[in-house]
Length: 267
Image (cartoon, rainbow, N blue to C red; front, side, top):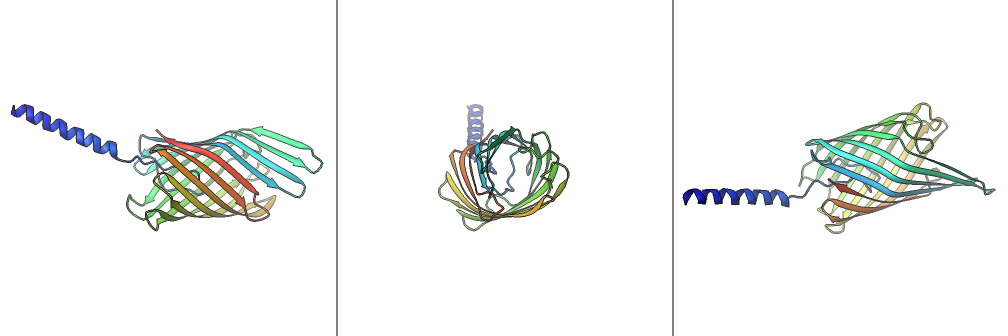
């Protein structure tokens, strides 16, 4: 009887411990749909898969109108350490379409380059307001211009965030790149900063407003792009997200409008 009671007690304790772990929320932190980055990393042994179902951008110039449509824009993030993840990104299909004043249409299709990255979470724990990280990336010229760059590029991203309240957070993402030249040969310096304000409308719905300023020193023409973005993410479950992003250009050099629909899942 004593032995049976001990076995029953041990079994109950193990079941209670298993239920406690089952109730823990997984670390589900998609980077999308924000145009900024995140310091959150995937847990070891788990994988984030993020995708844009449709990504459309329009840019009207004095002599032509340009449209870019991208589908199957994939990002896979795998946890390799408690605070470290590796990433692989690839654009499955893209189309650039231009139409000039005479009505002539030029269309180019292709795939994008491969993007390899590693993200390291530097500071911040659950329940703490401040978090920071760093991400380094490298792109391999596997795609076709103008969807692909035609040559390799690399860069570093530093995201920081501060939770003002349980629902409201402010963030900043700084990035510096050795960006590919428009010609497909060589690289140039590009730098950007993105300020974000995120508000949690409910446990399942979050909205984010962002402002981006980018300086691109391409040899064919130095440009500054100013953008405003608004995005919404809905999580019907603890491991699934559906999201929308709208971006508007604020100056002459920036693309006029961009709309993105996609989602993410945690395995």
